[in-house]
Image (cartoon, rainbow, N blue to C red; front, side, top):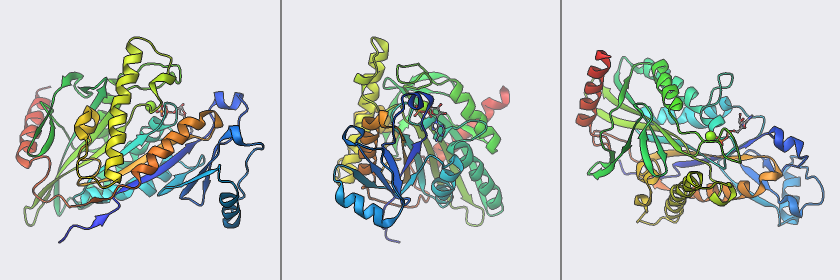
Amino acid sequence: MPAEQHTNIKVAVRVRPYNSRELENHNQRCIVKVMDRSALLFDPDEEDDEFFFQGTKQHYRDITKKMNKKLTMDFDRVFDIDNTNQDLFEECTAPLVDAVLNGYNCSVFVYGATGAGKTFTMLGSEACPGLTFLTMRDLFEKIQMQNDVRKFDVGVSYLEVYNEQVMNLLTKTGPMKLREDANGVVVSGLRLTPIYSAEELLKMLALGNSNRTQHPTDANAESSRSHAIFQVHIRITERKTDTKRTVKLSMIDLAGSERAASTKGIGVRFKEGASINKSLLALGNCINKLADGLKHIPYRDSNLTRILKDSLGGNCRTLMVANVSMSSLTYEDTYNTLKYASRAKKIRTTLKQNVLKSKMPTEFYVKKIDEVVGENERL
Ligand code: ADP
Ligand code: MG
């Protein structure tokens, strides 16, 4: 079957409500959702009055015509302050679970400035579980339903890229080396932890999170200055024909996208900012080149982009959630995030189902899984 051109990167914007600091500073909205797919952004410095969008098509036409200083950008979906993680899951990641089980690599990543809601979206809280929890639970429910006709071997890895160093969050080891072979970029010595249920998977997620490098910054005490890459590798065997394919579902919580200059760090903190920028800059360059349809994509420019090589473009379906605050206090970050996200929306790549030949060789996968199973039994 000839490969078709698909828009296989979907870009969603998620607007979060004011936080307490923003509420105290009596400010106004700088972003409004317009008819599910567009975001209207306005510069508070140029506005006289509080902007109020009436929600009708006519008003939308009027304002976009009249006020060119207001910016509208189109995305696949805009989620507003009243949307929940469950809404994002149902509309954005539940379809990816189906795609994974049909043999497509899929990845979800959250992008945005520190404090914009990336971790809230990805991990959430006990009361309001995030996309990773909801997606993994759905994955295992669907695996159970198909168990009669297909066998599934599931393994998980959780990596952190911090100052360009790759650490294994599940074993707390590293830095790990990346190397390239015929099957793509391989993390040397990475062993997948075999998983048999959603509960086990979520335990691994929690274990990895407890090992994340967290540092308070001026912008947000809870912020993380590292990129976290949670990957579920699944080998699907059709029981009838013994056809095998290996697919991967990646969930990536990126570090804050704000410029290093805006965090008042010195020493170590400053170096962190500089490296994060290097990785995100490289990711931005890859996005721009993919969007322009260029052949040479500079994945090699940072460790983040090397690991994400098959999660962006290539044989992968990607969801990018661009997180922003509704507050005018973060106008500049919001503007930069939306610009970055609207570039990503232009990416078109060729989608192929993974059949037999996959990035993660089946033999390698089986060996690693078996090794780890053995190790775990000894524990
Ligand atoms: P980031 O990971 O982008 O630095 P967080 O996800 O940690 O940002 O969010 C910063 C703060 O805002 C947290 O206290 C979080 O609970 C809150 N928050 C983020 N998004 C939302 C939302 N959609 N609704 C309610 N609170 C949110
Ligand atoms: Mg975070």
